[in-house]
Length: 155
Figure 1 (cartoon, rainbow, N blue to C red):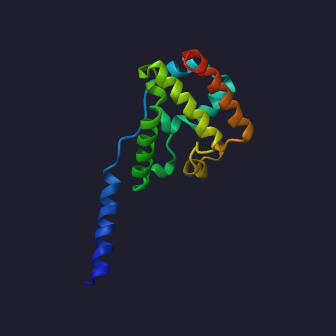
Figure 2: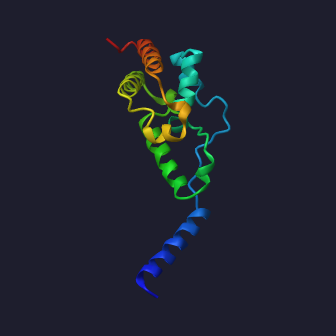
Figure 3: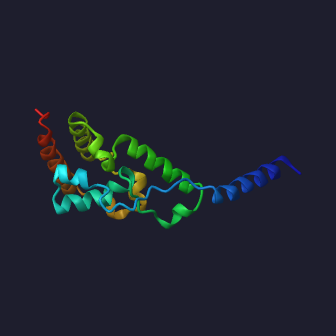
């Protein structure tokens, strides 16, 4: 057997095995998984909808998975993105942040949204509804700036 054929067979075996060993999904049964965050920051209905559409999949305890998440290695790639996203900001863990960290996270939201770094381009490729207009970016930024005032740290 030629080396290329051996490599192809090995890759096929790895691919098949990956279909049976999947990363854990980021799903919760708790309907209030962002309740503390929303209660403290008081987003309008419009901002809540924008956060749900653009942020919560990667930055909370509940992800709405697309059909293609059932295919490895995509499932691993998405799991890594979600883990990384929650490592930076986890709306479901908001009650465990101190006031200074909450203020800083809101400041980062403003920066990331204004600089068009969030939502990630990889996310908006497959989630057209997550593409923010300039007006929506300004709406999120204004809400986050107002929410920062609740923590008494912003100058």
